[in-house]
Length: 189
Image (cartoon, rainbow, N blue to C red; front, side, top):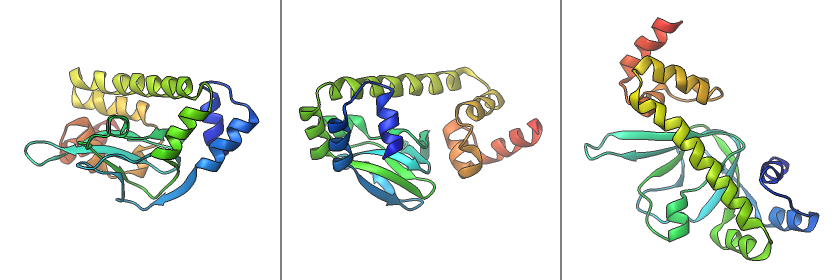
């Protein structure tokens, strides 16, 4: 819980009573590798904070190929925000790619925090804004660069991820085949 509180306090201030309330609402969840936090076709029901592990967000394109949109590692929130906020079915899978430990808030408890804690909505808004900025910063350069440059940028963006996840997911994220990724990795060593 300490990690989550430290994370939240980067975006605003809370008193001890508010921190205690947040702590009471959180439950710990262990996701095994390959289990889903939320799934396409379903409405997201929870907000998580990753204490340990890596999660990826992916979808299937119209050819049935699995495409990895991005990765989320420790000390970050995970939620399919559009589905969660708007009560609509998700179009993405949020999947553990390592064993994960998370703090989780149900939709009911998250809404209760929004209704009870003055300033909680502002904190959440700042977190969402930061996450959206990161997403754009991470994806935008990948569009125009060659595969080697994209891989080198991936290493900078996700320094704690590369040795912990299957290379097939990295290749999918970069929009290249696994054999191309192997060639790139061999050439830059």
